[in-house]
Amino acid sequence: APARIAVTGLAVMGSNLARNLARHGFRVAVHNRTPARTRALIEAHGHEGDFAPADTLEELVASLQTPRQIIVMVKAGAPTDAVIDELVPLLEPGDMVIDGGNAHYADTRRREAALREAGLHFVGAGISGGEEGALNGPSIMPGGSAESYRHVGPVLEAIAAKVDDVPCCVHVGPDGAGHFVKMVHNGIEYADMQLIAEAYDLLRRVGGRTPAEVAEVFRGWNSGDLESYLVEITAEVLGHTDAESGAALVDVIADEAEQKGTGRWTVQEALELGVPVTGIAEAVFARSLSGRVEQRAAVREAFGASEVVARPDESLVEDVRQALYASKVVAYAQGFDQMRAASAEYGWDLDLGAMATIWRGGCIIRARFLDRIREAYDKRPELASLLVDDYFRDAVRNAEAAWRRVVAKAVAAGVPAPGFVSALAYYDGLRSERLPASLVQGLRDFFGAHTYRRTDRTGSFHTLWSGDRSQVDA
Ligand code: NDP
Image (cartoon, rainbow, N blue to C red; front, side, top):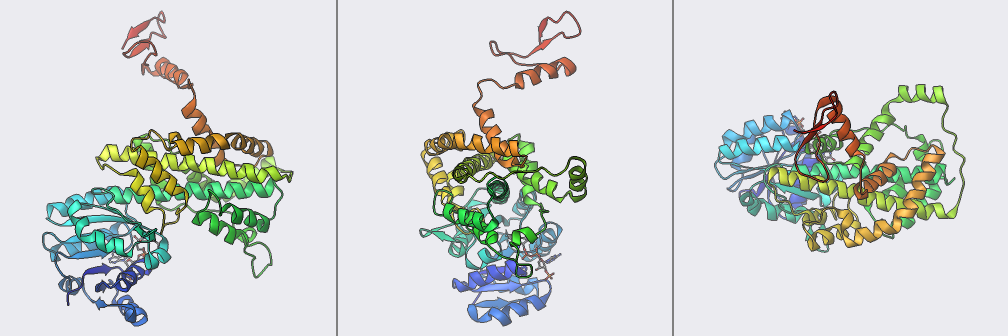
């Protein structure tokens, strides 16, 4: 019988996705540039379901029912283009190529347009959840034509994670929408992890707690509003003892974080769109700062390391929990704001509530909290910011005093908390009656005749700074 769907690219992600498909009863054709991988998959897991191995792409294409659906799971970038170029001449109008790799959404837009020219469908599907998710149910964010989703959607929904029987997969929108949403997901993941790391650092250095004690705190938090995969695994990592040294593993791991790809893309795109995703940007930069080992040593030598005197006090734990929650609301508000801006820019018509729904399971930022976000957008799709939804407004109001105490303590102690600090500044910025941007505009007009608008009349104005300082219409 012809195969229902195909996977080409059988490294860890592709293999696990193929196994997930097979376990759900789909006959799945599998192929890899190096055939040894295909054979290894069949040898180890062939018994799990109905696989149709192929040595060449021609064979793969020939084994499929029409219209054909081929998932490409190869290295993102040039390798993806190479595989697409090889595939296209083998396909017929109406066939679908689904890129499940971590593509940049602009590449997805380009590829979608090119394949559409050829009468083919191109689906850019963001897939989150790592190898474990690919095997047992990822969060899937497919972008492409509505027609392609009618064919591919049911298969993707079958293999996606489920929360309350609802699949973590929905048609995100046209062309690059799926990969864009996946990118923002990763940006939010960066911010979330940075905030968690700051909370730990404060409880430890200001609160005087050991990693094992902080692990206990996180375990407790995981049964409340903060319940999430990242909070859960934070307790695991902090509670882990290094077998070799007997020390807490977190003290043995080098404190230099990497920032590959998607977090950086999120910030780059936010700059293009003019959306202030300060929490995500701080998270990316905090990782960069941690990696500047020589610079850190030089500055530490010049100034001495900050000497933090721990002041254990019970109220700190609850204050930090509140600060973490409020900062997290800000990070998500910023990410959703970025999706809204992109949706308007590219005409994607994104359903923001649905994005929260498909992140409830399968992906790294899965959290109880996302139900609240979905409810917020279901109630008011045009919400100006997540912050103004009733539920989040109350939550942030309740947390505000604790949030300020934590930021003040961090600043006074010399413990860096860029995520908490910038989240609070974002909140204070948005709610200010007047911002000093008026002065910035005045300065710009002074040195560059950039003009300004007035609060009391419409139009653009320029002051004759080098003349009699009168105001002229610009
Ligand atoms: P890799 O990104 O390591 O890619 C390896 C695969 O790409 C192999 O199958 C390899 O074939 C194939 N490949 C590389 N270059 C070419 C080429 N020029 N022509 C044909 N095939 C090529 O594999 P992963 O499984 O880690 O990831 C696959 C995709 O999924 C990537 O885009 C990744 O970003 C994305 N992703 C990964 C996640 C993860 O947790 N790892 C999570 C979500 C998405 P060969 O065996 O012949 O070398």
